[in-house]
Image (cartoon, rainbow over all chains, first blue to last red; front, top):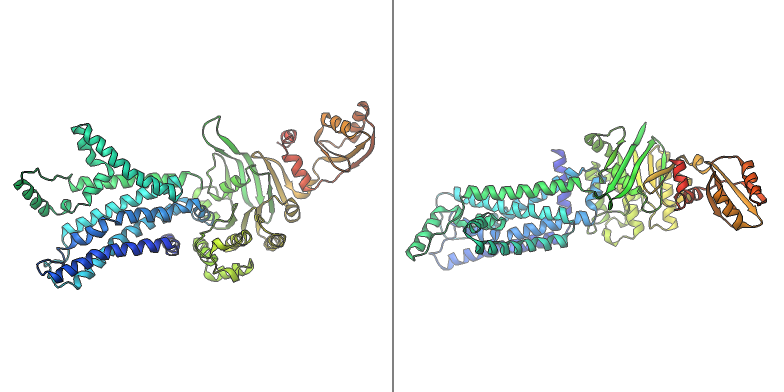
Length: 275
Length: 312
C-alpha cells in the first residue's frame, strides 16, 4: 500500500506541474458545463422540458463524457506517459529505485485517475445543474440503467486510455503516438467500410471491431432498452427496420478484452525493453 | 564485502547474427566496500551499458551480477535503494523546477524534504532551486543529478561521466565531492574520460575496450603493469619499425623524447640483442613510468589488439 501512495504522489506531482494537463482539464470542464447550463436554461424557458434526475442521466453522461471525454483521456495519457521515454525520466525513476513494473503501475494509476476524473466531472457538474433546475425528477436519483451507462463510459475511457498507454510504451514519443492514434481511428473507418462492402459475414464482423464496439457501448439506447423499444416502434411505423446492437454483455466483454490486451502488451513492452 | 560483482555479464543488441551488436562481452569484475573504482573506456566501449545493467534499466542477455550480494529481482530492487546513480546526461522533468524534480526522486527513495534542502546546499543549487530545470546550464543539471544521487545517503554511488559539461571549477568541485564521499567510506563506481581525474581520485580501475575488460586492478598496479621503456637511436623510424616486429612488444608509441615501448617481459638484454641483430644500436634506454592516460591509450587504440589478447 505504501508504494501505491508513493506512486500516486509522484504521478500527481508530474501531472499537476504540467500546463498541458490544466489546459486539457479546463477545456473538458467547459465542454461538460455547456450542456448542463443549456439544459437548466431550457427548463427555465420551457417548463415542459425536464432537467432532473434520474431522467437527465443520459444527457449528463452522453453529451460531454461520450463526446470529447475519450479523446481527452487518450491525449492526456499520451502526453503524461510518452515523454517519460523521450525525456528519459522513466529511466531516471528506475535508477532512483522504482522497478520497471512499478513505473508501469504508476502509469496504470494515471489511467485510473483519468477515468475517474472524466466520469466524475460531468456527473458532478450535471448533478449540480439539476439543483438549479426548477423541474422535478422521479423518485430514484439513479437507476440501474444509468449505472450501466456509466459502466459503459468507464469501459470506453479504459479502452482509449489503455490504447494510448500502449502507443506510448511502443513508440516512446508523444508526437508519433498521437499521430498513430488518430491514424488508427481513420484506418478502422476504412476497414469497416471495406468489410461492409465485401459481404454479409464480414459485415456482421464489423460490429466487433474496436471502435464499433465502443460506439455501440456509448450509445444510450443500448443501456436504456425502453428507449430502444420506443425508437424501434417509431421506425416500424415508418416502415424501417429496427436498430440492433450486440448484447450489452458481449460489448462489455469485447471492450474489456481489447483493453486487457493493450494493457498486457504495454506492460510486457515496458518490462522487456531497455529504458 | 562485494558491493558489485559481475560474472560474464553480456549485452547484445539485436537478435540477427549479422546485424547484432555485442556491446558488453562477458565482463567480470568485483568492487569491494570502500573502493573508488574507475571504469574507463573510449566512447562506445560498453561502459554505460554495463552500468545500465547494474541499475536495472538494461536487460542483460547473458551472465549475472549482484549488488550487495543480492542477485534475484526482489533482492536487487532492495539493494538499489542503497545506491545513488547518474547515467549519461541528467534526466529530469524539464517543466519542473529543481526542487520539485528532487521531490520526485526523494519520494521514490523514501527520504524527507529536509534532505532535499541539504543536498541542494551541498551542490550549490539552493539559490536556483525554484527555477525551471530547462533553464539550467549543463553544469547545473549535472549538479542537480549529483544532488539526486546523494538524497538517500547511498552506500554505493555510481557516477557516469559526472564531469561532462562542467567548467574547470565545476570539475574540481565534483572531485572534491567525490573525495568527501570516499572519505566517508562510500563505495564509488566512477565512469569517466578524465583520466588524470581518475588517476587522482580512484583506488581501483578497469579499462574496457569493445565491450571487454582489457586490464583491471589497483591504479598503481595498472600504471606500472608490464615494462615500459624509452628508447632512442639514430634512426627513429627504423627503430619503431623494428620494435613493432619484436615478439614481446605490447605497444609502440613515438614521443618527442623517443620511442616508448611496452614489453610483456622485463628482459631488456634481449631487446638490445634483438636490435643489434637488426643493425640498430641504441643511444638511450631507460625505464619509463606510464601515466594512466598512456596505459589507457595503449590499451584502447585500434592497433592494440595484441594487448587485448595478452590481458584476456
